[in-house]
Image (cartoon, rainbow, N blue to C red):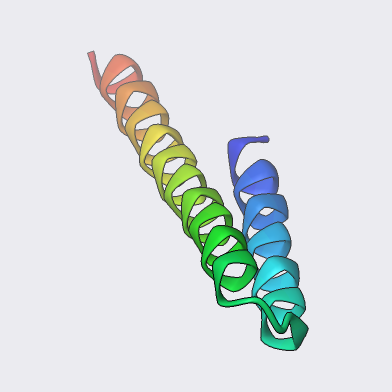
Length: 63
């Protein structure tokens, strides 16, 4: 589930980058690109969380 959400966040980030290319205002572009970067960071955090859960699951099985 975390990986699905991570992919959704990456999709949102890409959409924002595409929208930002067409904006005339530099301030608007910067704002959209910052939000896109935040989505990328959230996606990476969810992936790390998912990896951590997988490791914990494997360790509990091995015990």
